[in-house]
Length: 123
Ligand code: SF4
Ligand code: SF4
Image 1 (spheres, rainbow, N blue to C red):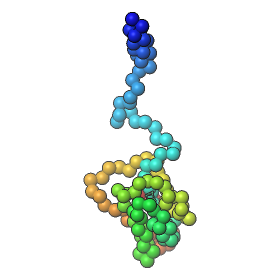
Image 2 (cartoon, protein in one colour):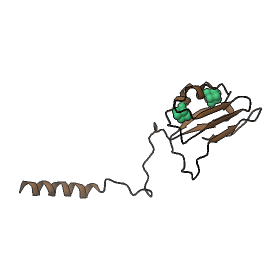
Image 3 (cartoon, protein in one colour):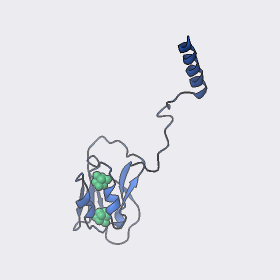
Image 4 (cartoon, helix red, strand yellow):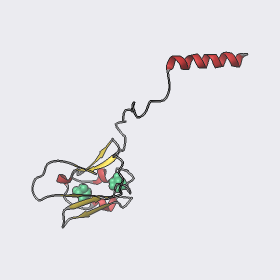
């Protein structure tokens, strides 16, 4: 008999509280400030020192100083954040939102034109 009362107690508590789950995707959970979503290149800040390429544990960055390109394979990236920490010019940023799904596995190449540049390129 006590089990029945316990069940009724849990049932009434749950009825008052509402569902524990969200109606995703209509209702999305707020992103945590420390979430590791995706890597973004701020190519105008890059000096092509190659430190990020050397320190990346997943071997997914290729820097070409002569051609002024910074290349990331986002499908190989484990979003550890090491490149963000070691970059001396803040040319890489961690974004909290996840990157959008893509239908093709293509590496992302960012090229820096000589001279001052504005704008950011998603990585
Ligand atoms: S992104 Fe940063 S660490 Fe990587 S090559 Fe550019 S300046 Fe160097
Ligand atoms: S977040 Fe980690 S795995 Fe991804 S590019 Fe940077 S160092 Fe490499």
